[in-house]
Image (cartoon, rainbow, N blue to C red; front, side):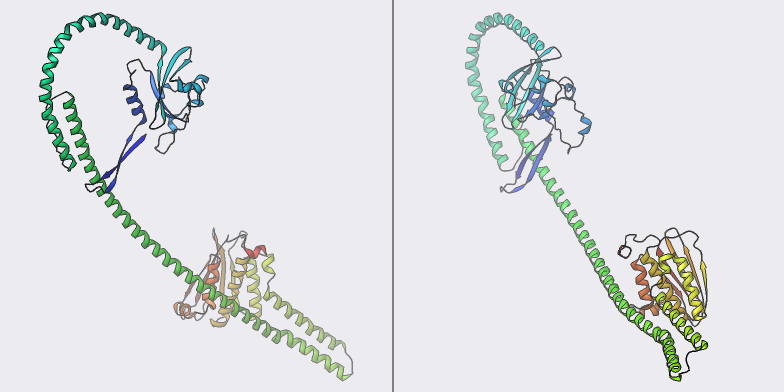
Length: 502
């Protein structure tokens, strides 16, 4: 396919646009073949090559004759490139039909294909640097030449007889026609000149047909055809201008909508970044607060338990030493009991700091041990329901976060609910683990507590920690109606977390 284009100017000479037309290459080849001097000499077919030997146009019905293996089903779209060369032919003689071969530029090439001789006439299209190759059978060409020779011999004698007969008549008639033609031609030419001036001024009014079939009549027809094309071109130009304006208006509207959407997305991202920044700030505050709180709790536990027990043991040893009576069996047993109590309290503190059960057991068993220890220590009645039947593999960071969250919620129940009775249930779905912590205590106003919890502590911080692992917390509580809290975390979070790697 070839595309011909031309610029379009208005009356002032200003460029308004461009117009073009697509012309199939095969039509060009056909027109060149039909208009050639040897068009009547039984041309079999014609094809085009460029200067590099690449095929521009080639009739598909002659692919097999020239040994070309070309599948046109792969070249259906306008963006597909027809990239073939006669050097791709399976016939060695065809491979030499290339601008790079010495015989190519001699004008005529003889070929023998399937024991039949063919003649190839080669002409160069200088404006596009293409080569037009006309293919004919030698036998057809010889037959045509013989017929022409026979006709010429028969006509030659008749021509000489008629020539002499008509010469005198032609001379007489010619003189008469010259005088008549001069008078006939002057009027149309003046009319034609006036029409050209009208076209130059933008008036595309057609010249009235004279009914003549001579050169003047053909000239008038060509002029009218040109004027009609110019009129149509102007109409197309106006339609294209209107279409262009319409497309520009639609595109402008689309860009405005896109800008609005981008602005909305930008605002949403800014809000999300601000929210996450606030969450990180509150989480950092919570970490500082939690660290300090744990330090105070450890110091308090050491002071109230281990330190007191060791102090009593030291005081007992001083009394025995000052009395000078020595250590009897009872004193020895009492000191041993004090030291064993101190070791037990130290182990309890170590367990609270880093429960080893999380490294050895799944989350449901770890929570069971935690609840048993809390019931024994605080004389509470926390009922544990384990509805997990199959083993569930959790990311270690998720397991620790869930364990600490349940421990914190139990502490809240014992401190703030006014009741030592509670119920804890753990169950698993297809892709998550859910823990329910429920008590029948005093309850609270969820909206008020969450809105006041602006420093990242308590339930608000717990919710953010759950969200960091893709989980969530659900609160259901009313004053005087008890509290029900759900902790939900995904079963498979990030198996390659930094916590696991380190």
